[in-house]
Length: 336
Image (cartoon, rainbow, N blue to C red; front, top):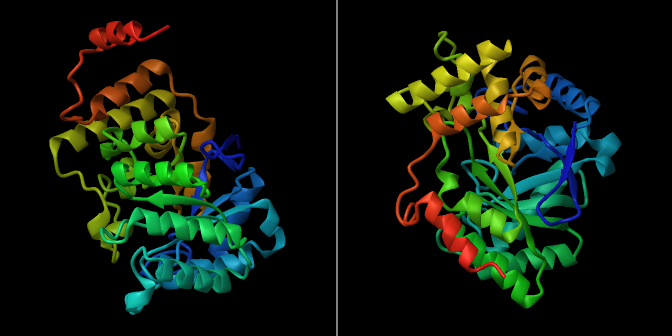
């Protein structure tokens, strides 16, 4: 396992993050405690150190599982959790949304479930479209100064709000944002329009969730597999329901055949090639082992370029105002 700094921070994290959305069975699918422990141990054995969870994963079970799983080496892992959605459908009004109150109460509950006195990274899970970014960033700063969290980030926020928050933190001397989380895969590249260039400009790390498109890029649904397609979160999964996705999966499977590997490894490695830290979310030790093998896969540049081309999103206005050759000339005008 290789490591990188998370954005401009000095925090060193592994190039693959272990997502724990399948730690537990509260959503009607997932892994029981022994299997979850086996996956964690296998991840740690190859050097993985970046654990991603959330207050609502498996209705709180994921955090409870992790309390026992990571206890022996808590200081050696980077533990990240999220707030915003409560822990279950019955969470009250004050445990949902991005407000300071929700943040503090959710974090306190997460700390109890996790059996720790701090989390290394706290994410706002998704924008609630109401709470000001100033309130969120100031609350992050207070929790950082209190030692309850060490770093903060935003997940599934629009680029303009992230940029505003990063600027406010810098101007007011608050603890900076260090990273964003976005859905990112060969079948979901909307982040290329604004979020990815924004993150590069502000020096933010990027974690990509659902690097396999909810399982679509493994090719298993083509072979009659079901998995999460029949679970309570099936509405969030990608389906091979349009020509563009068929073309992408065809290309992924073709590259996999050429390299004598699996489609899932090709898809994960492609994400890594874009500077993203993929969050892998296995449900079994076999899935984890296969996912981890993506780190050692070498995809030739010509095939990476092909995957880029076949999956390229339409960026829309104002992208494309300058043709590539004109961009080069324009940039030269401003060079000293």
